[in-house]
Length: 167
Image (tube, rainbow, N blue to C red):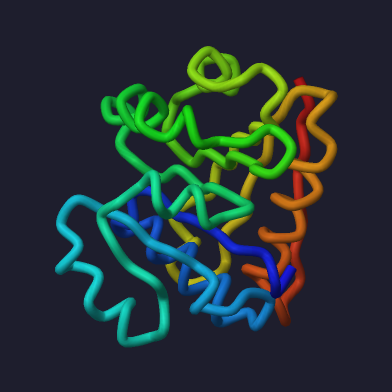
């Protein structure tokens, strides 16, 4: 997992909590995590911690193996349209933490064979104590495996539980 590259699209509060947790767990290197947002200057603190930062979502996705989308629900369709053409089904796993958006809605915007996982962390993610529920279609085994391992790394050193629901 340490060699995996992650693009986190929409690095606001919850996105930066996730990035910090992944890096602090030692399961992922900050230098292999790219954070994007429109107001990139708000990521200066993350850059000082070793994260790659920028505003170019397409470039971030092209350089990643796992893409975590953490935008507001009203932004999702535009983001998926923007990055959809560079998502490779044999390479990328798309994990969405967008509130209230189903896997099926996401799949309408991307190639049908892309591994898509919906992750639903709770607010305790800010202190690395979140229980995160994961949902995916039954054929999304690789994506669920990566999401599950990521969630466990996020809580390294403490007891953790995963609730998986396949649709």
